[in-house]
Length: 81
Image (tube, rainbow, N blue to C red):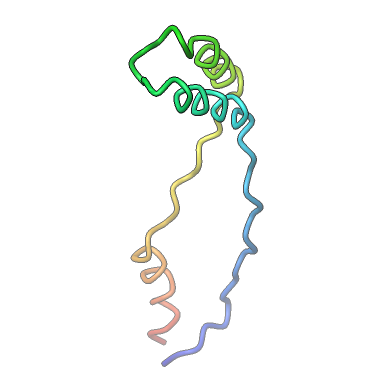
């Protein structure tokens, strides 16, 4: 096998904290207490709070990670020499 001279490994990034976790927890708790997911009046306040938070938080999307095939093709050039 060949050696990889220019291999760089980036450190892992810290996980980001979702700002709407308390509102989601309140919504799930309300559903657990109500025992009825179809009843919209019982959890209307929790649903409104979660919707407001999600609307105002901006919604950061995760970038797609490259597949293993991408990395094999990229590193394969260095291994064949």
